[in-house]
Image 1 (cartoon, rainbow, N blue to C red):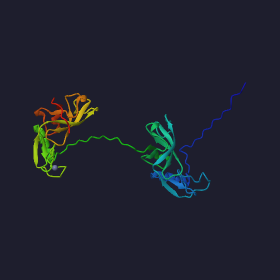
Image 2: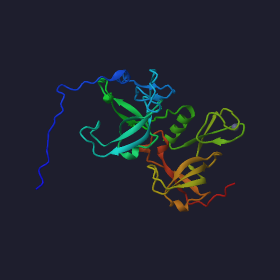
Image 3: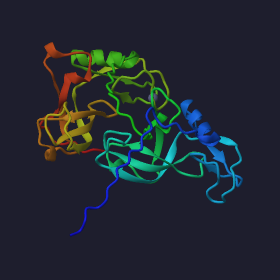
Image 4: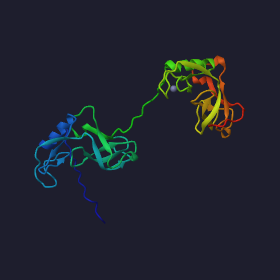
Amino acid sequence: MPSDPLVAQHVLEFPGGYTRTTGPVIGRFLSELRARRIVGVRTAEGRVLVPPLEYDPATGEPVTGEYVEVGPAGTITTWAWVDEPLDTHPLDRPFAWALIRLDGADSDLLHAVAAENPKALAAGARVWPVWRDRPTGHITDISHFAPEVTKIVSEVRAEYRLQAGGALRVFLEGVERGVFLGSRCEQCEKVYVPLRLACPECGNTLPETLELPDTGTITTFAINNLPDPRAPEVPFVSAYILLDGADIPMIALIGDVPAHEVRQGMRVKAVWVPESERTASMANIRWFAPTGEPDVELT
Ligand SMILES: [Zn+2]
């Protein structure tokens, strides 16, 4: 009969904690951490070791004693994802163990990197330390590293109110009354709508204001397939309309006609919102609708 194996139980215990001296090199590293700095030590060959060591592992020679501040940011050289952290792990959520080459260092520091998921990590990814609130001079003074902030999500809401100055104000006041105001250049005889204060052709001031009819001809148009709250339906048509008597077309929506029936040279007329709803804005014109008149030959 086989005999029971011999068993002896040993307990190794250091009540009150085991205090170990760090030596001058690691001591300096931890003291710097307490001040939220990360330092390396320069080797005889000029490389910077982080964390610092007393001897250069490559040559076995003592290091120089010259401390160099590195990082605090660095680049991941390699990493391993931890799906289920253990009690002893620095983070209580999934994270990565990574070798991090801090800026200015020639060796890698092993530390935890917090990330949403492994897809957020890659060799070459930039990471920054996240410091503990109360550093004590321990490697865990750096709680972990986190990916560099490459984007921010912020609420954007801008409200614009255009203060119509001079010519535009006069034009919109006309629109409120249901008329389009234009201006005629005395020199080149061009008629501009909306009304302007100076002729873009010859630079003349345009003192002469005239009322234009709300009928015109489509010169060019575009069929839009993306919804627009102002449009009657999708697809809808936006067009350049040359008001009768004007030399410059204005842009507007076309309605009351299927998009595929809109054509160049088509005669249209403004469809105004009821007078009681009008304000000094282009919203007074719902859109332009075909008049049924014969098409115009465009020159
Ligand atoms: Zn002119």
